[in-house]
Image (cartoon, rainbow, N blue to C red; front, side):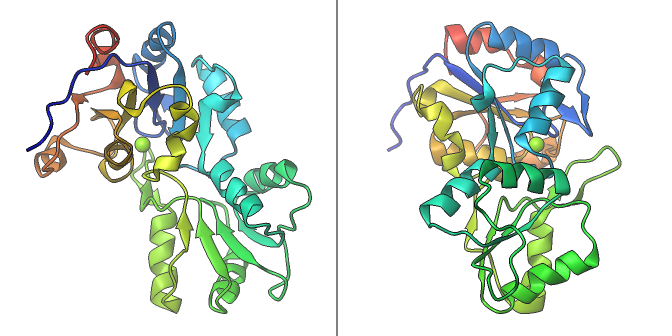
Length: 270
Ligand SMILES: [Mg+2]
């Protein structure tokens, strides 16, 4: 028999970005004001799988939008987790497939890494969400992974939200590599990997964290795997008919983040 859950006040809120707070860099109506109000009560974190930009870019974007930022650790990125794993495994020659700005950020985090090793030197291929590559770069990845070089991805989302309609993300690239070479990555670091919530779990228990997101297979799945509460915003990828097909339902469902009753979450709990 399932144990009856005790409602606990929320002590931290983690917001997804694309499709939850904004779309194509344009904030949803009331989103910024809502997050500012939430930040007056509890610490606020931002967690995105989108590695097409570096954490520094996100910091500047969020500040420009007027979103509150309580320290650099408030932005949680799969790039940081990938870097930690590279250090743990003492890997030095990493063929990094990412946008130039992200490659530059990654190199600055550890100048001892060789991010453009020859095929022979390469110990690892790390694929970030690269949306400005040319075909030669794609071939460079292909020549390495078809030879059995270790292969990691920052995340596995199938598509990335865009105002014109969803565009292919790493998960779709993976289908291409699997078709061509029958290879799959050894690690995917982003949501729904529960390690993404480690910086928040250092400060409070899982059931005291409210994750706010728009996607079922990354955001909601992360909440389920980590044991935190989940609020689904219907302004992004998920429709009410998608939700109706789910056996397990989110704790809160709202049209946008501005429609979530955060005061009740802080006072009565979820
Ligand atoms: Mg999203």
